[in-house]
Structures are given as structure tokens and as C-alpha cells.
Figure: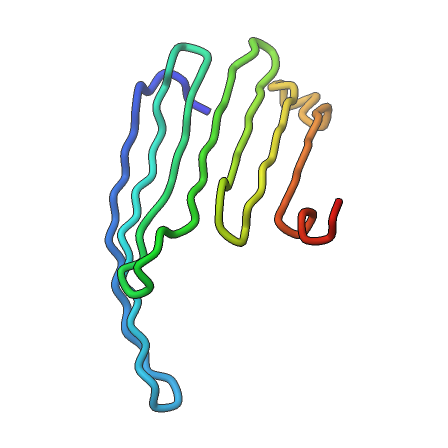
Length: 115
């Protein structure tokens, strides 16, 4: 994660048309994503969109990163929808010790099975 860039915003519009077995399919969506450095050590990331055909918000993802000097911490969260999940990670930055890390993941599959 590059904490030196104060903010970043990406906007996109997608449209597609396909015809399979005589049935036409149209997809239109607008998406935005980016990040915001709250300080030298903290960064927020986000992505979301809108599906114009189904009139619904597309998958939303929020992230939080923290530079802990020799360590890096991150949290990524999908707050709603059928793919709700979060991933928490804390690990050493050094490539020599990159396998020394702690991960905690919870996905929609976990919640459906009652874990």
C-alpha cells in the first residue's frame, strides 16, 4: 500500500450486449473505486457501483490499511449482499519473513453453515 499518494478516484461505465440462443442480454453499470490516505500510516479503500438493469447497488468493498513500521495491517470488508465477508491480515513487511502473518477470514459460506 502506497501511503504517499493522498487520494485516488476511478470512475467507469460498462455496457454490453450479447445474444445467446436467441435471447438478448443487456448489462449496464457504473462503478467507482479509490482510496484516501487519512495520515502517513492510515489508508481507506473503497469500491462500489450501480447496476442500471437490475436497479441495484453492486458489490461494495471497504478496506482499511495501517502501516505499523515493520508490520502491515489490513481489513477488507464486503458489508452487504450475498457475498458478505471480511478478511483481517497482519504481517511482516520484509519479503524474507512474509510468511509470518496472521489472517482471519469470515465469508458468506461460513455464516450459511452456522460457523
